[in-house]
Structure formats: C-alpha cells, structure tokens
Length: 245
Figure 1 (cartoon, rainbow, N blue to C red):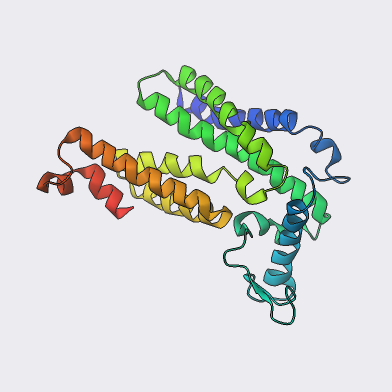
Figure 2 (cartoon, rainbow, N blue to C red):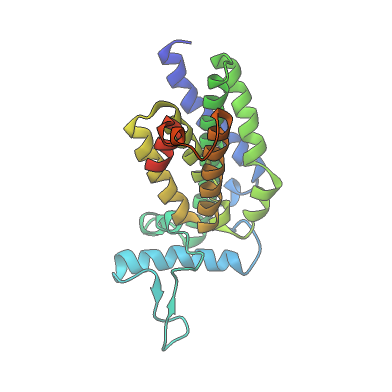
C-alpha cells in the first residue's frame, strides 16, 4: 500500500465511524436541539458539568473542583466527583454558540466517533504487526472497532454517564503503549503520557484499568523470556521502557 493510500485510510475510518455512530445513536443527530440522549438524574448533572466548567474557567474564574453553591454555605469539593474535565471543558467553547442540551449531545456523540477511530488505530497496528496485509488489517480493525464501540456497555452508559461513555482514551493509550514498547521512540512515550492524562480526566476508573493492564502485560512479556526475578530482567528493553513509562 502506498503512503498516500495509507493516509487516506484515516479520514475514511473517521467517516465510517461517524456514519455508524449516527446509526446506532439515532435519532440523536436529528434532535440535537430538542432533546438529550438518556433519562433523568445523571444526564441533568452532566449538563450542569458543562455549564459549571465554563462558569469556573471563563465567566468567573475560580477552582472548578470546588462548587461554592453546592451544600451552601459550606460548598462542595469535586475532586472525586465524576466531573470528567476532558469532556466538560468543551462547555467553554460550545456554550457561547449553542444551548447546554445541544452541547451535551455533541460531546456525547463525539465520544462515539472518536472511540471508533482510536480503536481502529489500535487494532490495525496490532494486526499489521502480526503479519496481516494492510488492507486486511484495516478492514478487520474496522470490524473490531465496531464491536467495541457499539457494545452494550458503551450504548448503555451513553444514556446516563458521560464520563464512562468516554472510552476513546483507552485504545489510544494502548496504541501508544505498544508502539513505545516495540519501537522506543520518544514521541510514543509522550503520546502514552498524554493519553493517560486524558483517560484520568475522563474517569479515574479507566486509569486504574489501563495501569493494571500495562503492569500485567509487561510481567507476562518478561515471563515468556525467562525468570522474572533475575539480573537479566532489568536488561530487557521491554521492562526498561515500561519503567520509564
């Protein structure tokens, strides 16, 4: 496959992810202004998050992780709250131009589009690394991305939990993780750190998941090469790169 064709695969994958996301969340796109996806309770709270982040970051600059009017006059800390700053910071950009309902729908829909794309990136890389041709790898990765993106887990959380709907950071982290272990290039280490931070700012549950996976993966890879507790363990490039990460 030529370099130009490889580059064209990215907008194609994004476009397919957009169309399939529109299909699986329909009629969301047709009612962006008149309704919100989901039920009550957490949906309203998540819309408040969008408003609050804009209020705290732009309108009346203050600590966004402390809301003085919740439990007034004491206020409430939001450090362990499901604020999902990586998603709700979009309120700063979107709310001047649209209602909070439309902004919420746009951010939620964007999570589906991005999850499909980042999962495709990860799976295509793993399939090509396993020896499959680029076209087969791209097509199979798209099928795998659909299974992950439109799983019952993702669609169910989309009805209430904006923070748990934000799955896109995990495949991106794993993509950078595997490339860093395999190639050792600094750009993949930077990407790994940035995507881990993004995951943290979506939901710390997912940060725990990727941390546990990374640890177990490195241990398993080292175990295949020999004893875990030996001098050679620290000479293994995979272990050394994992320690740096």
